[in-house]
Length: 246
Ligand SMILES: Cc1cc2nc3c(=O)[nH]c(=O)nc-3n(C[C@H](O)[C@H](O)[C@H](O)COP(=O)(O)O)c2cc1C
Image 1 (spheres, rainbow, N blue to C red):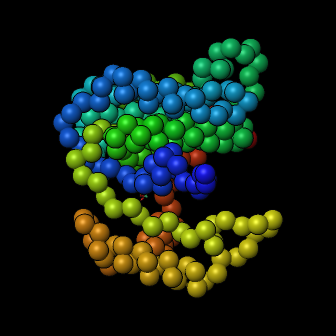
Image 2 (image 1 turned 120 degrees about the vertical axis):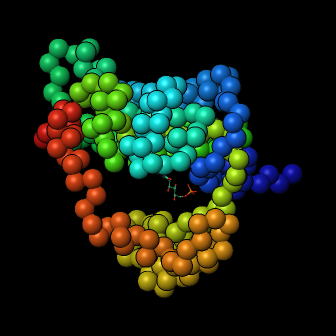
Image 3 (image 1 turned 30 degrees about the vertical axis):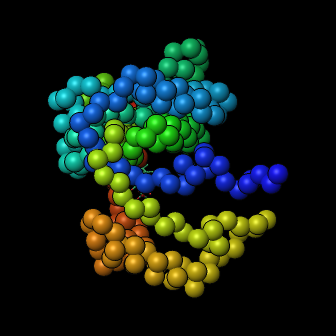
């Protein structure tokens, strides 16, 4: 019997990912929360340092404040679950007498491992029929978020995930073609025609999606983000927190 080796339920689930920003009032059960966190902490970890900590927000006033600090994001305010994913060297530093901290590589490990941890959580929650949205907006006011959550030195909040039972699903967003993102043996400059074709596809997507229709394409959405300095305070903040000193 021929087994289809290019598709299975895990791959189908991952490929059907779309951010969910509107939720029903139904709470996420304890069993679901535990399953999601167990899947998240099963992620790979650089040198098995396990430098991620998740803070679940159950205090309504803190959730309101985090929504405000994230740029008044509606989904942060209304999500039944709001988890803040933090890079955390603090826990390990307590175990080592002469810890040599502040290296950029340590910052990278914190970001990479926390990102993988979060993506595991996203896949797990989607597999349970829930939906969610990463919230990088918490870094808009990272100092205030750090104070609000009592984060010690050698930690920082990398992103949040707001999630719950979906009230509305978005259409899938087309991704860049593999012709420009998957290469063999060496780096190859992207074919401008492939990018132009992708821009035409995204123009159609933005024009016809069910909400927040826009007359734009992918390149045009990238420009304003890359043209101006963003979160200019980040390096000073990270240094104060004990990261990125050398
Ligand atoms: C680290 C990270 C931070 C993000 N921050 C936000 C955010 O603050 N607010 C938001 O609405 N979406 C946020 N997103 C979601 C992206 O906008 C979204 O994943 C992207 O547009 C692709 O859409 P899709 O997830 O529906 O496929 C973030 C995604 C990532 C990976």
